[in-house]
View 1: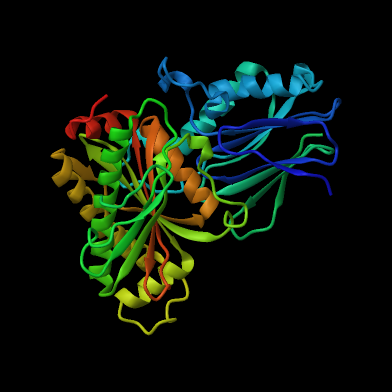
View 2: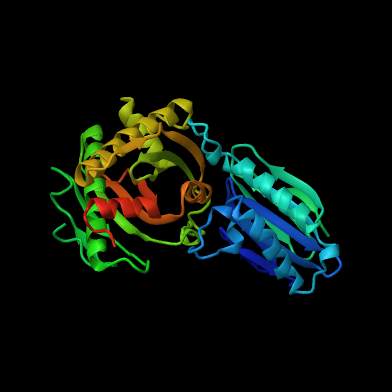
Length: 168
Length: 232
């Protein structure tokens, strides 16, 4: 068994160590964005919190991994630095649930669905095919990406991990 | 507060939280550009609000409640996370959006055992009767949160002379990791997170261990400091 590398909120991590897996725990409205290069066997995972970096102010510290539009380019850069080729990358995503059903239906609080839309758009902009997704619903998920095989697994509360897609 | 201590210190606020309750406050401010005087003012705000909420909980249950505030401070969002051991535990989260002069998010996190205990207690059932937290249980916990939040923001309003409004309770049952993540995301979606108060309620018999979070954004922090005559 290799390492299970935790990818916390707003983090972007990559690995090409065959024994590793990357894992994002407790994804509610957050999205776990998995990218994989099956030829170079390089894997990357971003734990995206919010859709759009336009909300940050000039004085704020920039956390690339926090927003869909900045996390995807940062993720691509990270896997490229480990030898992945952009043209070979493929993606799978999971998360974007609405865990708290807000009584006030403010669009600002429909974060899960807005996150999913923004991640899909950012992957399209980056030219990375999205091969599988498990988004929406009302429960939290844990997403794991296996470096050796590119296998993406999703687990929900109280359940067993389920294979979502093999990116490798 | 007489004994709140310096940042990073632990202190008791016996008496301030009302008859029969006591609390411990722990503060760990890490942000730059906040003065020691401003920290004192924020400590006062946290003490008073949490003390009133603990009193409300004690009144509701008819017994003494301890409150602790293990961490309270200005933290980066990415740093709020459950320990790996606790991450998978099932919890009930009750979330309120605070509106008005100083907005933010208030959340209570009850363990499954807390939720069952409160359900038995408040519905007059024998201890151990409630097995599952169903819709009825969630609704009841939402109301418990409503009472606590109401007393918290009332205390804050009296102290700062600012206006606060509370959303209805929003209840979710999920893992601790997911609930903590949603607290942070909700606060961030409403505005850049700045102040976080993290309180622990402990009932005397040790059966209840709810947690309380109050997160506010930078503008709200400024409004509160301004109201206290402490603006930078």
